[in-house]
Amino acid sequence: MTDPILLYPWTADDLPVLERGNTPEMTTFLGGPETSEQLVKRHAKFHRLWEEGEARMFTINAASEDIPVGSVGYWKKEWAGAEVYETGWSVATAFQGRGFASKALRACLQYAGTHGDREQVLAFPRIDNAASNALCRTVGFTLRGEEDFEYPKGNPIRVNAWSFDVSSLRRGIESAGNSAGRPVQ
Image (cartoon, rainbow, N blue to C red; front, side, top):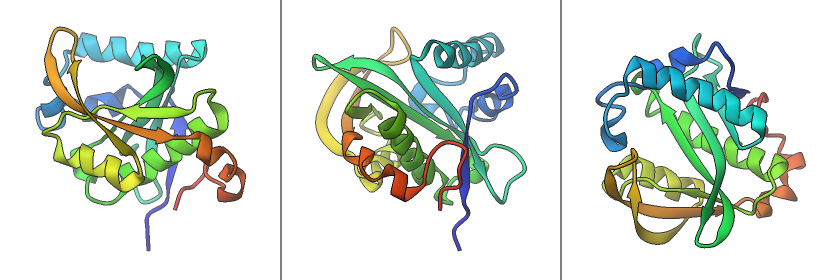
């Protein structure tokens, strides 16, 4: 039996989710752990961007766990001359390998398809991040090629550009029954 998940909109109480993911192991492909001050700023930014309609960040909550297992979300971006969303995710080490990331990313894409105004969602994992690249492939993203990227700011990296057409989900969302705050099997 699979462990259902729920996505909940980011709240003022969700700083511990960022703290759990702020380990050397979890941030290997993201430039390393952030300072406490940087985490507090990012937490506030998630909140502010939601209120401004620029982003949607969620906690990932598993039915079998007492605390959120991670986060997933998307934000507005311009890519190759088009208005798209960029997505990102994080599942704490203790909860990895149980399918939470793929379920959460699918639910996030469905939410973007239902509530968003853009056709494509992009992901940019580093080319050497095997797990995130495999997740993109598993969820149904299309590899568009490699690109130069900067993350964190001032740190050049090479990424794979993956795209997902959320407009194709708009027609089937209601029958699928998956959105933020509802169980995802």
